Structure formats: structure tokens, C-alpha cells
Image (tube, rainbow, N blue to C red; front, side, top):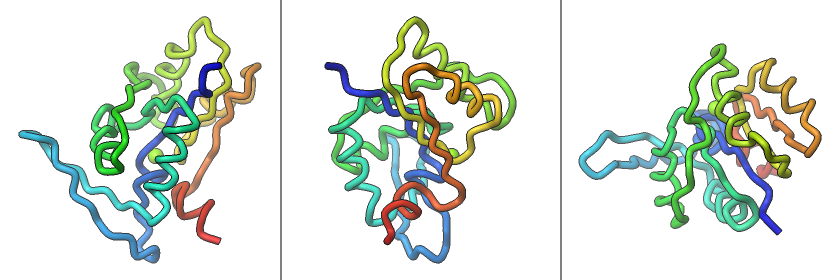
Length: 148
Ligand SMILES: [Mg+2]
């Protein structure tokens, strides 16, 4: 059986900007390329290891394939980018990429996103096979769901 698909955002989910969480900054450097600043929590790597073993992870982020710099930092294999299409309103620009990725298929999938738009959220609610958006506001997955 295929693993369920996880559309995974980075900023606000794996990359948490809250100052009171005292997370350390990690500089991720592309060979010969630009750099990214990552603010992980202590839960980021354990969450990613679980996600990689449980789901067919697809990046769904403005980081695009640079999300794989985070995967490398976590010691995990590269994953593809599901957001090749960039269209729609500010908060819905990932929706077309997700729709194209799923075209003709009805897999079980989860979308973890801190900034999902109304159109995208409405679309996920109408999907027949558990395409669930998980809206996370301002705290990130690791911080908000694993800190207790
Ligand atoms: Mg985000």
C-alpha cells in the first residue's frame, strides 16, 4: 500500500520564527548558491523523521526544492516539490500545484500549512479522500503541537 501523501510547508511549520521559543538558528548553505536561515525547534528533526517514514512527503513551500537543504540537515533523503505551478491569490498560490499533483488520483493526503487561503481550505474540505488541511498559525507544527 502506498504511503499517504503529506504536502509540507516550511515557513511557519518547520521554520518557526517565534522569539520566545529560544530556538537556535541554523544556516543552510547551498553549494555555490544562496543560503537560508532555519529556526528549528527541538521537535523539528524527530517530526521530520516520523514524517519521512510515515508519508510520501512533498514539499509545498516557497522554499521549493531548497526544502531539501532542511532534509539534508535532518539526515533525510530529498523530496520533490509539489508546487510547480504558482498561481492564484496570495494565500492560495499552492493550490493549483496540489491539484495538478493529485489529478486523476484520490490518495489519502494531509496538507500541513500555516497560511492556507480560503479557496484552498474550501477545496480540501470537498475532497473525498481525507485531503485535510491543518492550519497552523504563527507557532509552527513542532512548537504548537508537541510542546506540552
Ligand atoms: Mg508557511
